[in-house]
View (cartoon, rainbow, N blue to C red):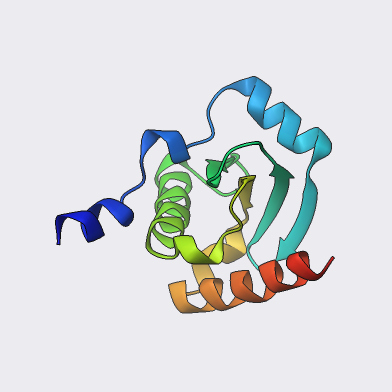
Length: 119
């Protein structure tokens, strides 16, 4: 049981930190546009996926930005098997994200990453 809880946590190594990492992903990454958010995907030399979130002020005040970030982190944390290993992901949410539920977001992500694997 303890191990299953660890698998569903969001560890420090799975977080994309540092401006240089975000800049690298923005410059070299491939963009996937989905309803409510854009995902920028760039490869890394690690055996796991790292998550970064860039929620700008266009979403709304701080409470809305924080809610969008919580939704994305929860989606990543509970569905790690969907995300491609060896990649850095930067999620850029938009206001439409608040009109979607977690299952819709998950379905959109599954379709997007299947298309990414084919290319």
